[in-house]
Image 1 (cartoon, rainbow, N blue to C red):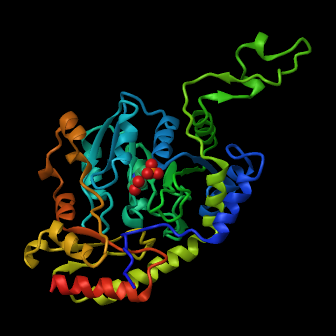
Image 2: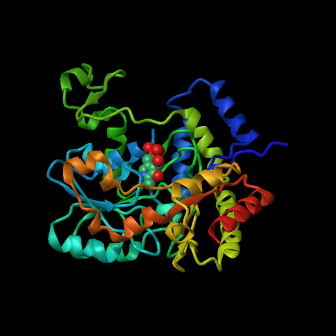
Amino acid sequence: MTKRFLPYSRQNIDSNDIKKIVKVLRSDFITQGPNIIDFEKNFAKYVGAKYAVACATGTAALHLSCIALGINKKSRILTSAITFVASANCAEFLGANIDFVDIDKNTYCISVNELEKKLKKKKIDLVIPVHLCGHSTDMAEIYKLKKKYNFHIIEDSCHALGGTYNNFKVGSCKYSDISTFSFHPVKPITTAEGGMITTNNKKIYQKLLLYRTHGIHKDPKVFKNKNLAFDKNNQPNRWYYEMDVLGFNYRITDLQAALGNSQLKKIDLFTKKRNKIANIYNKNFKNLKNLKTPYKSKKVKHTYHLYTVLINFKKINITKNNFMKLLLEKSIGSQVLYIPVFLQPYYKKKYNYKSKNFPQSMKYYEQALSIPVFYGLSKSEQAMVIGRIKKLVT
Ligand SMILES: Cc1ncc(COP(=O)(O)O)c(C=O)c1O
């Protein structure tokens, strides 16, 4: 039998998920239907937030969140140097100024000390911490800084659905204004493409709804064109809507929401399995001197969306590129998540931030490698991954 390829992560879709999607396909509403409302309700309940707004992607979730917080050309924003480009792009979409903060050497999330150094220098409007690999940022510490320096917080929780911090679910917004999620196939649950935003603030919630759908609303109380909006009896015209601000079509479909609802039921199962896999890796890699396993704070329930190890490639005398190739020869996928965002040509050209100011991020970039962790990874497949990696690093 040929060995199957083991990616660093992948979705798990079962026959029940498929049944739910087919049911929507046979129904009257495939775009704006009842599954979206259900998905939002179930999601808000699961994470313990008042409101949830489903949208097209995790990137759309970040963009909408920045709009809802009033980010504009004059705003200054900080995010982690190690993240997917979308965590920074959301500020660029609005012409805001983005700067990066070096990561913590243990959690790989934004360093609280480095963040405060930047906050002391300039007025910052928004901080976007990223719960990298599924390990929550130290949010209570960031919240203390919010009180001291007065800025908004959007948690980029794309990796951390199913995780907790101080026993609060990631997404509860206990220490933030907004939390955003992605349902891309490698994420903790999937809707193919998709995103979600949670908040406890009603005004933010209303803005998110408005900007998700073109800036269009149907609320007669705030209609501006009275002569168009109402009939002679002062009743609102049935067809009438108004566009008051410039919004987007950032909606998710009912098909995707049906899948999301079905996947959400399995989030704890998925998280448990990934934790199990991570524990086996941790145990087997414990005494390797050229490989560092992921750190986990006691305050955190890790989702292990990614299982990322740091390998001293110089010491083992194999380049990272060759190491990945040697894994691939055994059908083992691996990935580098992520390239420091400030190194991307777009950001380099615009801001020219210097690598020397981000020593931990550069060290992480040199050594980090994410290896397979997903619900369907079997024991024997994992044993094969462990054997191959041990052989290469010792
Ligand atoms: C940390 C982080 N932020 C944002 C995103 C953007 O999500 P999406 O791909 O759903 O737009 C991703 C996923 O790719 C991500 O990993």
